Image (cartoon, rainbow, N blue to C red; front, side, top):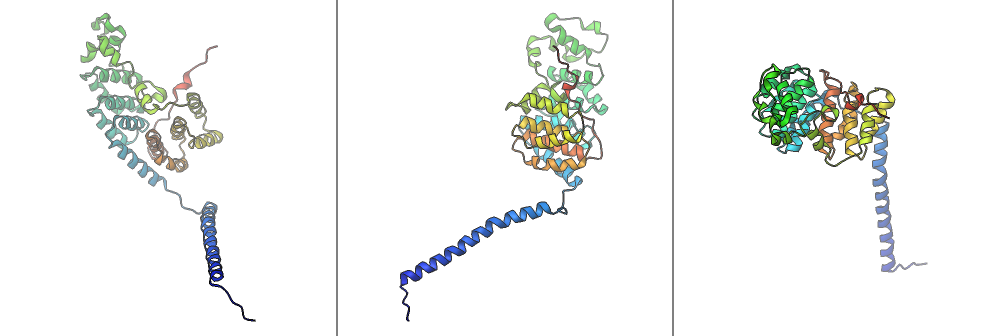
Length: 311
């Protein structure tokens, strides 16, 4: 029997056939990437970035950020360099920051020099005691004092005396140029938040730069405290915190992990090189350098360690 097929029916059959091919293509396109990801995760031989490459990438990031002209970014970079006192590159960058035209950057560099506990910076800090800017001289005196050097004692006495105009001669030490300025209430007001003695040993103003958006301080303090014990459980907790939505928690976890002395941990920090927050990615770079460098830096001692709870 002869079968007649209308043009309309042939068109419908053709459309159905084409639609089936499209549906098959979409299914394969959706499934293939997932299978590839699972295969990559299951492959134990997938290459890892070498510690030397991580170290190089981290330095490139720091140097790139240091080329920025924004005070806020430069302060964060200089503050991060305070954890890298044993690194010649960090030493050079801090010495260059001292000559910055931006006073905030200079003061941050002085505080970072103190954070390194590196005696090579002491001669530079001595010279800065006679800096024409009282805030710079005062921060230098404070930093030297924290390093056990009392060369700037007259400046600190002058700040304590305030407008009482105390007799600097009774100090028995060198009298520095800034001494007369720090008696001024106006100049004292400018030094109410120097880059010194903030959390982690960084300065109050630097800390404010890093934490302008606010954050969950109890969680940050808790992260600092548990980091004093380098146990596998603490390590896992801090690694998990790298993905926290709070930038302060991420920043703290990054910085504390940098003190674990395990180059393998640097792999966990690589994603944070692209963090949307400059403070996090800069701190991650500094921590990665600490983990992968052959020159060990001094361990970070959280300031909260010495605090006691009063009942």
